[in-house]
Image 1 (spheres, one colour):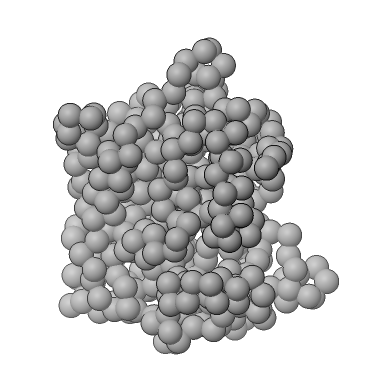
Image 2 (cartoon, rainbow, N blue to C red):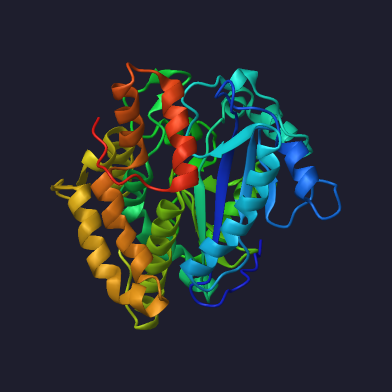
Amino acid sequence: MKIPFNASERSSLGVEWELQLVDLDTRQLTSAASEILAEISPAGDGVHPKAKHELFESTIEVITGVCGTVAEARADLALTVAEVTAAAGRRNVGLMCAGSHPTTDWATQQLSPDPRYERLIQDNQLLARQLQIFGVHCHVGVRDGAKVMPIVNALTAYIPHILALSASSPYWLGIDTGLASIRTKVFEALPTAGLPLQLADWAEFEEYMETLIQAGVIKTVREVWWDIRPHPDFGTVELRIADGLSTFDEIVAQAALAQCLVERFDGELDRGYTLPCPRPWVVRANKWRAARYGIDAEIVVNEKGTLAPVRRALGDLVEELMPVARKLDCAEELAGVHRILEVGPSYQRQRAVAAANEGDLTRVVDGLLDEMRTGLPSEHARA
């Protein structure tokens, strides 16, 4: 089975941001996507070039076009978010984003009117029905399909960095799960989600996809929802591991991190280097540590089991990537990682709000709505 890879201009960038629609009276998720999309779509039919349905009617995903820089991606997102915000406001609906909603029960939510979501539920039953989770996906262009699988394999070493920085789903159905990211564990329930299979080259990817299709596991390549995956149609590597992010500041920091990592690996392949491919047990252990402990995780840094704080590893990574960031004109956005470390990732900020308000999770929702409007707080979160 041949799967054409539509090669991209080096390090082009696209961002997808899954937004929660919240009733401003109840602070619960509300089914308003179809109405909002109908209002903002050019033909009034709900089809918008940069905003679309997700699984539930309480979600709208906003997407960029193909961008050259992180600043361009931010500006692109901002225009669409402004459209959605205005239409939502006319319905007493606010926008926010986190990996999960602190209190809303997925069983109360209405599915979007799309046959593919009906098929998803039919195939996966309860495992799909409970996917009331939200993420941010970054697509980074790759010039040659032969480079894609080595880059995907090398990127798995940075799953804990990306997840710890973005972790924003400590609550599930009104309960503090004890995790920094329950979203990642909920999503792993699907049979083709989670960590990518380590494949040597594009030919092995094609062979594996053909096997899955022949076996009836999937119908198309797009039904493989790995944390990091090739996207042949777009000509990108798609980093899907990040939890939902509540501010533009965090979005651009994550986008810069993704773009710089792919650019670095692409360049190293050009220079004849063999990219590192971490052992699967290390990748799995580190993903769990980041999901459980967030930015306080200690991650495995070699096959002997040596540990290092992911907070320190992130700081070191930013410094390593800064020359690449300057080349890509995203040094300021990449430096935003330091600010997130200073104020705390979203899961810490949410817990700090809950602790300051006797565990009232409606105040956590209020905090997330406010961050969407105003950006990262200036004070460090303590939880």
